[in-house]
Amino acid sequence: MVVEGTRPATTADLPVLLDLYEKAKEELRVCRGRWYECDALPEPVADVFGVALRDEMPFPFLLLGTIDDYPVGYLLATLIPMLPQAEDSVRGHLRFFVEMEAREIGIAEVMLDVGMERFRAHGVSSADITVLPGQRAAKNFCEQHGFVARSLTMHRRW
Image 1 (cartoon, rainbow, N blue to C red):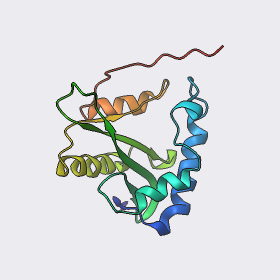
Image 2 (image 1 turned 90 degrees about the vertical axis):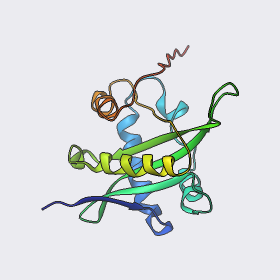
Image 3 (image 1 turned 120 degrees about the horizontal axis):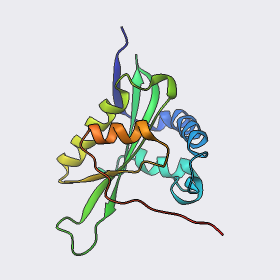
């Protein structure tokens, strides 16, 4: 029996997180719209993950998604400022990745549930997940969990 789960990432997990991020990067590089230059994590990614692993504040934070305690995915939760006219001062933002072989068994859902609960526990009342063109399964996953498209960013390079 497969047991899917999640746990907070620790500094000892940094090599695993970087490996998972490289897999995500390779998968997303083929997406249109210059994902790597515009929407990826800033390099060096180890520094970005390092901030989340310090656990000095509630955000950013990192989770590992696991199958039988073996890491197969991650979720990075951050806060983004809202515009001055908004009711709330911040919204959550989630980035996650699950290895292809581990998809459709519930890992992303478990991580999403934990991430959303963390947002709620700290008074964050909304969150975004960026889905790129061609990621129909990710779009469907988000919609199944109550997310709706609120914006499409069009890009042109010359």
